[in-house]
Image 1 (cartoon, rainbow, N blue to C red):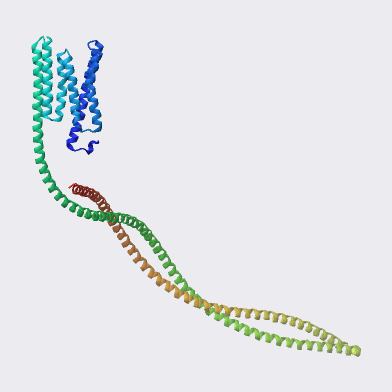
Image 2 (cartoon, rainbow, N blue to C red):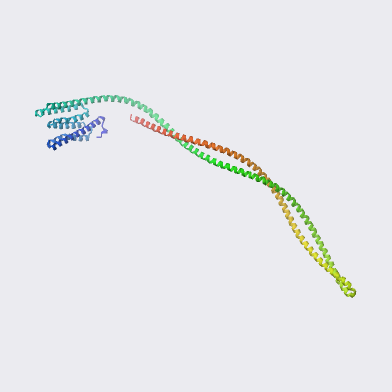
Length: 494
């Protein structure tokens, strides 16, 4: 039988049985060993020693066997105690050593475990009787040499029994007092437990509500922590972005300065270009006028050359006439020579004249041919000059058109340069405003960066504080859960 299934009284009896068997068995083993030692010394016989050991150990072994079936068996104390009493009686009555009476003292002390005054009294009376019988037998057999020893044996035995009974009764009284105190304490405890249960009900309800609120608070803290993490991360990103934007803004400022310088260069170049366009327009107008004059002069030269060509043609006709006249003169001179030859001496003078006239006619023909050749050459050159002048006239006309187109282009360029000058002026104004705005942006970014760093610091501090609050809330929540569990446990064990 398991001790856990026993009542309190049965568990107490089972523990007393166990201690009884342990101490009695140990005592019997010691006594048995002592008697075996006596055998080796030759003071005891084997049969006697076996009898003592049998009286000592058999009851204890029997008690252990009974205990194996039932730890709380009431028979164990009787088997162990009465078996030991038989061994004690046998040893006391058969021993010549008067100190054997002390064997009973440890056993008497052990049986007080049962807190049974009547049982102790009966055992004590039996022990006193056995010791009286032992003293009488020793007196009859003449073994008592000193009556004081017998008196001490009897007195010690009686006093031990009386003291054990007194102690047992006192312990019993103490037990009654403890029981009374325990009953009072039990009543107080019961009342207190009832109050505790009432309070535990309230605590349980409050703990439940508190757990619900703590759950909501923990959820809110979790959301706050997530938000603070995002705020912290966003603040860090904003700070980084502000720093990056500040660097980029500084680069923009540098670019604005470069654009400003380039705009100034463009303005200067546009002004130079405007001056050059103005000069170019003046030159174009002058060139246009010169082109017109050249065109008119070319036309006059062309007209004069046409007249010269006509005059050359007329000169050709005159040379033709002279050539015909020279031919006719040569023919007449030939006829005159023929006639002078016919006349003989009378015609010699006329023949000389005719010969000279023929020579003059030949020279005239040669001169006329030379003149014709020169006129032809002059006419040819005049033709070439006319063709060249015509080309010049055409080129002049083309140049005049180009000059006109160039003048128009210069007018457009002038207008465009004016527009560019206006836009360049506007660009200077825009660059100035952009530089001013960029300076304001730089100042704003620096302010924003400082504010962002401060926000990041506060966000980090708030995040750390929130984490600590979350730890505190988790700890409180665990305490509330434990309190709620304890309250539920009290309810369950009500």
